[in-house]
Length: 378
Length: 202
Image (cartoon, rainbow over the protein chains, first blue to last red):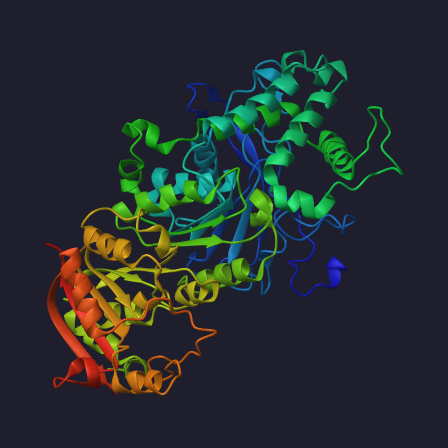
């Protein structure tokens, strides 16, 4: 597909930056003296300023949700199939905002930014940020853009946790929350996978406690392994088998430790690619944000009580082949919302893509989201 | 009543009977809710709000299109998502006959709802009896499927259903047996093609 001619594409986009001088107190107790957020917008805000939709990203994505940058026409935004003119989240109708989260490595203030106290990159000193902190930063962006209330906040996986947190931190500022392929908290197994990824990074000799920028090195090995582990959890067994099977990369088994199977080659490729564009310090922090998310924790583990404050209508979507955040986790959310008599619809789709299914085009998934957005009054 | 509601009740006369039994403002759970037409009607006509449960992808999407809250869950695995007595009314309209574990679902309905409303095609209707007597599985307006492609697995008669209610200790509070949309009072198990019950637990 040639993106520039695609009538469903938002076309060429330009990333913007918003600067916030007022210090931001973080959940950890630390304070950021000020910060910048990189963001993009698509579509036009209406006169009533009632058509804004915030799209929150998950682990490795960014504010570049849709369209392309001039000169990089093949690098489409990470949810370009979802967002655009005539797409499920229709930019002819909605004003869509994508934002790179605090602590990120795509333009927002993060470990690679300069710490004003030292004049050097924050590196390992950048504080651990949480989903709550992200929402606090996002609300400043909303103020900056003159958005009093979002028509919807949506996300998949970690992005969906932000869509949930919005309904708790700012119940009056969000009308609809779209919670896709997510969970109200990570399981021990989920945390375990994150910990292996973190260990891979922090034990890389090039990590230097997170202060590797001025040493001119990158903990590439650690990042590669972290990404490979992550990738396995994003795909279902079935999807992996379908994609690679036991197909060999070379003519016959090598009886050595080079690549035998296609799947090995794929994982190495993903790992290599990732380590060229993603920052290890950011990766560590994002996995912590995942681990720490647990809105019920302050309510003795009672999710129903935790969601009492929410006023938004919810659309919860899960995918049967997603074993990372399985449908049972989404059903916990649904149950707690039902207890509170919130408006909620729940889709449990029999899609094969695993956790990554939320990024893939599926006619039922897209039809449901399209229908949902069409019913949002502006 | 709007034109759409007229059309709905003409196509599904049991829904008119069900709607009459739902009190204004009641909380409703509609199991096997299809495209959500009944819930939409109950909200618009009676301000009775609730949720639909549906397994079919296309129907779930139709519910969302109809702005009806729908939960894509399998009724066969029970109603674990719902708490005890969390709804005034749990509806199972023309779905009973497609359920494998009917006893479990009946118990679950009355655990979750203060009352249950159930409708089903009456297999005891004379036309069904006649077709079976002539050596064929019945096909009719209320039983439109051929035997080889029917979603129905547990067809029953008015008498059968009442026996089951007795066995489960379910109290039948009201009954409407219909044919061609009209109530049948004489020999309902023979002359009625569609039965609707309002039940309560012990």
